[in-house]
Length: 225
Figure (cartoon, rainbow, N blue to C red):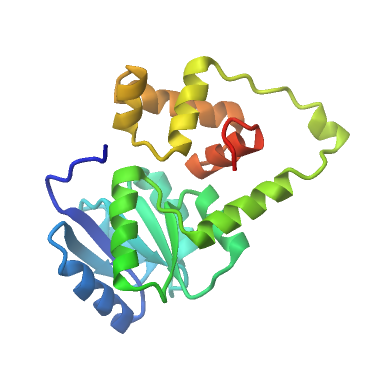
């Protein structure tokens, strides 16, 4: 069951290409459940905007003057961790995808994506936290294969992480793209407790983000690839 949308999803777009920005704004503004609340042409401008303008989703270009998208993403996740951030770029770089997902990006879209794909990504990130496509999936699985390479003796000596039943169940449900509310209903806990367990899972596994937790789950055969 998906989260019910009672108010339009509030979106800010940060991109220094005026025509691209205008095109995205025009296409998304045509959707009744989307509201463009602000636009920025660089990272510093965006960080100033989010101080006073509430938003749910940020569409963030990687290559911008003054402050690029990567540095901006890092700062956004420090100051507004609840914001969902969709990265935009002309580069289909797998290592870049993995890096951005690990530091908190919720999706990664090529700028050649049509307006319906952008709309789908915005809705899915709002409702389910992440939007995965062929590019993100391939990058994350490539990263997993690299991490599954034979371990050094020092790595093998690291203490084994033990998850209790609740933690394992919640991690598995996260990998199934269930929302916090859906997980809370399934395991009969409050959403706040689920969030606390998710934070504890990150500490125990050393994962920096939910994407990192998903990679941990696959690596440790909690779920299948």
